[in-house]
Image (tube, rainbow, N blue to C red; front, side):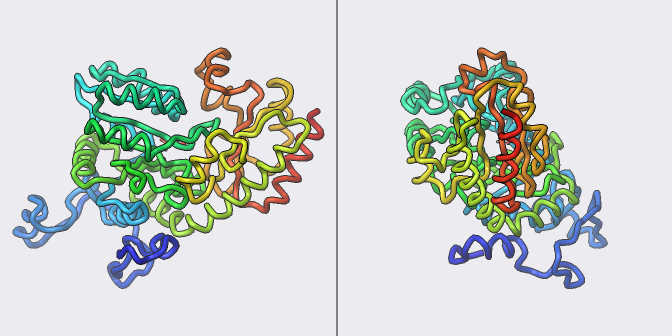
Length: 393
Ligand SMILES: *Cc1c(COP(=O)(O)O)cnc(C)c1O
């Protein structure tokens, strides 16, 4: 795929420029554990990596290869590989890159599962972990300057939508030869391309916007060829391989990624503006709002502000329960990034393991609702929120 193609075209054609077997124009789901050869020489050549081809689906599979080529194209990356879930992509990337004695600098607001890798698993492996305040870029730079193997970022974050200056922090990391990894799940390559901002690797939960329909799980990593090769090798041996069926569903979802994200962006902006003016709402967390602390950075480094927002209610958790129960067009479920709106309280979902004081320290009010704005009609979503807020107060 050449660089002259626009995103919407690449989303359709990336990885799919040749016809598949029998001339299929849809990507076949290669539901096969192994790949057979009548020509022994060819088999051995493929096995030894001297010829392209597939041997065994824990390692490679033709359906997965199309998906990997598609994200590689959309991210403008040298290479990409895939995983069974987003957490498999993140944990395998960290485990492949970090060794005993290494130091990693990350932020306090990473996704809950990622945070567990940092506080529970990496220290056991002899990796020193330093977690910084997410938007204290001076502190992050100072910790990076003390020396580290890897800087791990996520932007925007969950659930307070903090925005990190990827360009500035990547520069600081590269000055000391550290690798930069960015979780781009919330933004997707439509709204943000971390490799162009200086990252070495981008990780995704494909379960969210990339698939977009809440019906398949997966993870992807794209970036520098030599690093992807190491991460792929870790995965082919440890085995968190994506299934062909899920790969197919994710790559079908990705064909409409640009359209969906444009609508998510528009809807979220309208919902955020509506909620900002609502008498029962205390605060709205959305980087598209001019008073959001990360708004200027987001405008610089993103092409859209995304479909995720949170808001806190005037009143405590009892109001959260009432509003959630009154919402008609929102699945009350612990996921995000789907065509359908999803809503839930961070207090009992993503941040249930924190104490009230720890949530307060992380800037997460007890009365907060995280709202993943779907691609429904914005007026219907706003009317739904309005009736839910009215009847709950
Ligand atoms: C959901 C999510 C993950 C984990 O992905 P899974 O597919 O659930 O394993 C990682 N990072 C972010 C930002 C997420 O939202």
